[in-house]
Amino acid sequence: MVFWTTLLILHALLAVTLLGAITHQTVSVWMPVRSTAGSFVGRYRAVPSHSYASAVVVLYLLTFVLGAWIYTHYRYTSRLALEQLRFFKVVGAFEVKEHLAVIGMVMLPAYWCFWRQPLAPDYAAARKQVTLLLAILVWANFLIGHIVNNGRGFGS
Amino acid sequence: MTPSRKGVVFAIAFGIAYCALYVVCTEVNLPLFTYHPATGDFGLLYQPPGRGPAMYWYGWMLTALVGALALALIATVLPEPWVQRAITFAAAFAVLYLITSTGALAIYDRATMELDFLKDRSWSGIAALAVAAVVTILAPSARMQRIWPGWMWVIPLGAVTVTTYYLTPYFTR
Image 1 (spheres, chains in turn brown, orange):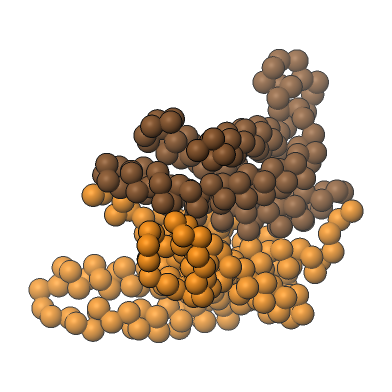
Image 2: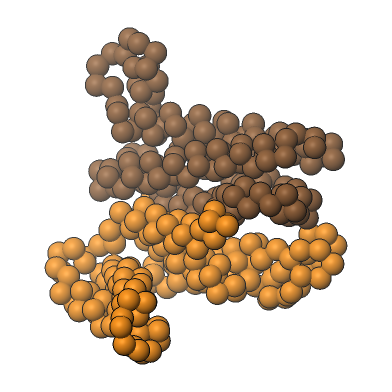
């Protein structure tokens, strides 16, 4: 139990880091600051968006691998309990999460190509859109993971 | 360093093909292997649950990976306009098939007479194929010269929509 809990916490920490990186990048590419940033929000938007691409790819893969590993334990422990408790929405939310995670992962090769330096103007629109969709998928998966984890409560 | 054009074609074709194949694998249940987490056993292709549940997710991912790698490699050796037309055709077919099959079932449900042929999905498939072919042929050549990078968000968004829609029974029980 300690082993799986440690993995789950590690998975959550990686997910938080990924969430921060992809959100930062999405905000800076969709709402770039043209002049010197003064406020906190302005400085948040003013980061060089391209610098996050490699970190996002690595963090996504690490988070995915850990999640896929933990899934084996979830499948024959937590999920069975959730089904017995008739928490079908929670189980369904996790099913959605597994699909979103895979679809997000297969976007990574193109995402990485679009963000390679020097940034190609041909991919400017696709770069913004793919980054936004990836951010939405990461956010959705993070929130679903949080909800599923709260399904029975820690340690129950 | 900017990636080569072949690299971008491979990445886009891989992403699109993987999404399409993954949706098919999940709906038709086509895993290359089955994992039994309670016992730690693996089985080739689809295996029913044994002692404990069976997991097909890893198998679906592998099936889609093999297919997508093959299609992406083929895409890199074909002329780019052909690949763009093939993607346009496949995307048009998928959308039209969803529209025609849903429409046919809706008409069948509301019809006052017996229209059994509407339950046969092959009619929807044939109609979608025909219209998708016309759309692909009539598409402006200027838009067919290079692969549209926007496919890389349109197709995954479609895959997310379809896979999530098929899970609605979990939320309506």
